[in-house]
Image 1 (cartoon, rainbow, N blue to C red):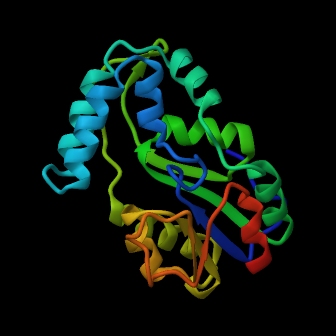
Image 2: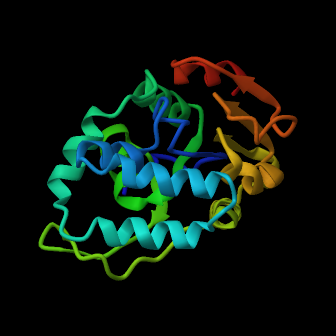
Image 3: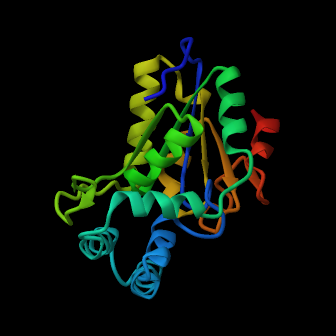
Length: 214
């Protein structure tokens, strides 16, 4: 875990899929690279149409990943379409006194890949058991929409930062709960679920655009 050099006076929480990735979620892209995108897309469409819940989706997806190697997943994540200037933006935010965190309903292993590459201070996501570099399909602990808000509240309390000095950056319905409590909300390439909930709505592939407002 990367620790800030001085006590932060602001917090910023980023979503991962569709916010730091561009045009595709981390899990869908992993399934694409593993030759299983059709399976995943069917489940994803059912979830988006409210025909299945997030827990059912996550259980089926995790079971399908049984036996996959972590090194192959990390190789896929290295090739995923991403926003430009992620690392530059994280560094600039830290210089401005932010504690920079990443939270996703997707897998925490994907979030940790971004943490190691770009320097996020903390990450949270759905966890699953990995033994000797291989996914077992067991031990999944799902990370739900409301937990993003709980995570932000917890960090704000730990660092003595009022919620009025927190920022949330997201793109979809999984960010609605955290948008309700964050002091400032930025919708990045949002899918419509955040319409009217953000202080700023941005589009494009340059994450650095957010710095103008912070």
